[in-house]
Amino acid sequence: MCTTCGCGTDHVHIDGVGHPLARADLAPLTGGEQFAAVVATDSTGHMGVHAHGTPASRIIQVERDLLAANDSWARLNRERFDAAATLCLNLVSSPGSGKTSLLVRTVAQIAARRPVGVIEGDQQTSNDADRIRATGVAAVQVNTGKGCHLEAPMVAKALDRLPLAPGGVLFIENVGNLVCPALFDLGEAHKVAILSVTEGEDKPLKYPDMFRAADLVLLNKVDLLPFLDFDVDLCEANARRINPGVEVLRVSARSGEGFDAWLQWIEERASLLLPATATTGDEAVS
Amino acid sequence: MHEMSLAESVVQIAEETARNHGGSRVSVVLLEIGRLAGVEIEALRFCFDAASRESLAAGARLVIEQPDGQAWCMPCGGTVTLSSLADPCPRCGSHQLQVTGGNELKVREVEIH
Image 1 (cartoon, rainbow over the protein chains, first blue to last red):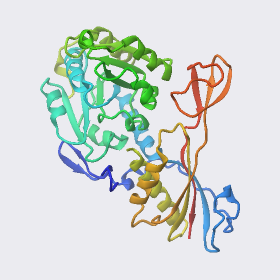
Image 2 (image 1 turned 90 degrees about the horizontal axis):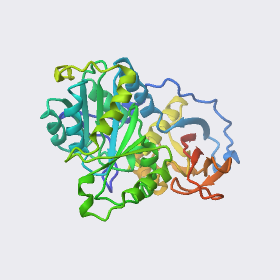
Image 3 (image 1 turned 60 degrees about the horizontal axis):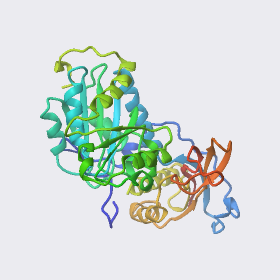
Image 4 (image 1 turned 60 degrees about the vertical axis):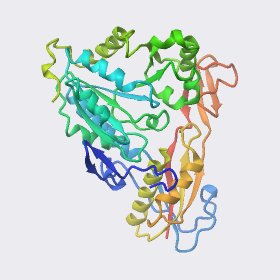
């Protein structure tokens, strides 16, 4: 674990139950890693960086992606979503953008049409999962401890506790952080970035990795615009500078403004996997 | 601070490589970290020092190659070099850029003893 900031991924709790996630747990899935043949012992001049080699040293060519273990778990997650015809959305934002409020309003409306489940990622507390469960929707809380983002094996373990009903929508609320979650594929169909109008218009420029990784930006808290100097058009333009194809929807989790478009965005994608059955909320995953 | 996760992966790959090849110690790890990969190199080095303690890679030197970011500029119809995802095309100023290189996050070689 990092001794300065304390960041690490070794103390994950899922619904309060400890799941030590040592790197060794993340390793064995790919089967695709290949070790090239051992290269000669004399490393002089090899890649121009190993001129110090001693007679006993050997250079092994590895060529392994640092995210290979995460990505192999993400592939497995994606297969589970595909098998259950489930649309998985990974919600990312900075802390305080209104992610959970937006999610509470969203799941309450979708649950009437489709099975819904939520995986909540936070460093500590089950507050967010409790808020989701209060709507009657199943939620699993992942506490990452010192970790600043969710990784695919954490989602895999959470899925063991969250059966996926066919045609459902699974929301993953990532840890509030506009940097690290951009890099980690969880198996989702889309990353959705949430940016609130109480933040700066230039956030897409400051955090380009995240806004490039997202397929949709939800501009939240637009009910507050009359009280702010926030330039919505400039913010959208900044997002498109980073990601020309990104869609932007203006919403308010408080007033419900813009929710029709957001819910339609979800429905269009979920119905490609399985048309809605339009029943009661009884089929929600439980 | 995802550099900690990445550093843990580096240590794991280095240790596996050493074990699979009968080595008892790792002295050098050669990484390829593209300039658009979203990694703070100094943070990665710091985290590697912490993550490699009491491992076969303890004390190993990190050598890091940083390929430039590359993108296909649609208006220009050509490949250009980028130093940041927020940068416009250095030729025409457009942001219609498709990143084609500089995302690498790889362990390329491990020197073992």
